[in-house]
Amino acid sequence: MANSTKCLTNGAVFHTSINEDSISAKVSLPFDLNIKKEEAEILETLIHNSLEIVLRPYFFDKSDKSMTMEDNFRSKIKDALDNNEALCMDNAEEREKLFEEIVSGLSKTEWWE
Image (tube, rainbow, N blue to C red; front, side):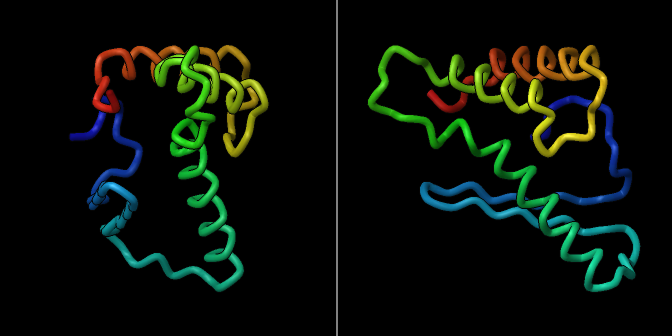
């Protein structure tokens, strides 16, 4: 079930599959995209970068037992927001607000443990 945040893609249906060693995502759109190859390439890059931000915490050094998964999520998400990586959020106050919302959601859904 999706996190309870405001829907930004009204009418889109998200299909995700999470397995032991793979993740797939498909979005059924309520309209035809009708974009050129160049724009499709940009969209592909944006999707790739967004998924990397979400998955990056799973790639931390697991030999470092002093850092919990939640600490790692907090650190990686804060780094991404502070560096404005693959995010269109130039306002530091808005980035901090988003960071706090993400982290508070992580504390409620500790499904990774």
